Amino acid sequence: MNKVCCSCKKNKDISLFSKNKNSKDGYKNYCKECASIQGKKYREKHREKVLESKKEWYRNTKNKKEERTQKELNKKSKVCSKCKIEKNIDEFYERANGGFHGECKACTLEKQREYHNENRDKILLRKKEYNRKNKEKIENYNKKYYIENNDDIKLRVKKWKNDNPEKYKNLSVRMSQVRAVREKNVISDFSKKDWEDCKNFFKNDNGDLECAYCGKILKRATQDHFIPLSKGGNYTKDNIIPVCISCNSSKCDKDFEEWYKTKIFYSEKRKQKIYNYLYKHANTVPSLMRNLKKV
View: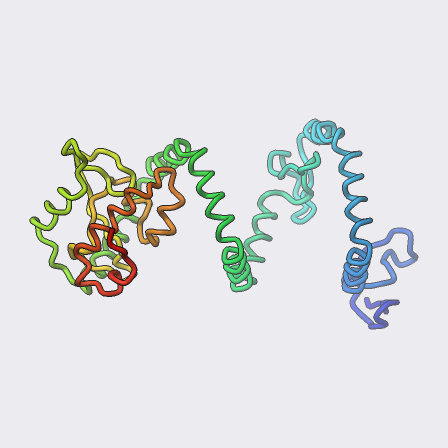
């Protein structure tokens, strides 16, 4: 069954028209595409009016939020508008303004997956562009979030490891394999003596070894590649510094400057000490030598 749109004058399938119980055939006179175009034009032309209308609606309905939610909870079940199956009310997402969405959680997630698969490149490009334009804002937010939720983050990571031992094991094995491949293609002449000299440099006035990043007293130090192996770093004395396990894991293959300034333990003094050490041995890494200033 077809119908001619009163706006674009095209003969289209009836499924491309929205329903209207007041019309003779049960459908609106204009197609969905034309309705969308006209709606967009109206919103752009009357932007302030539309925003005020939305605010007014929200103010009038805000007080009824709990009432709407409770009303649907009392029904205990609901028919999904997409799959047409009656499901428990817990199978639906709650609306911000009260009540529950028409589609069940399963149908909503399926729709999101389909959209993501069909528009993967577009979504990634949009995220990349947003991150580029809001780099400082994101860094400040991450730093603030880490400070306020540090203990919670550690608990979540620990819980995930305990709940997913196989995944964690496979991830560790995969990372070890990737690292082994990388180490075959790097310069590796870091000796035990170099390691002892390195640790001695980062000891405090009391003779205790400190993490070069956070300043924590170390009983057992791990070796961190200042320039990650994945970004051209080598296993040499001008690229290894002693750090705690937590900092080593957190920094991973991130750029030092970008990673360090987001941390609660950021210290200009410790950063300069790291640079002094690297400068001392930077003769084998000319690119690093150019970026360091001796103090």
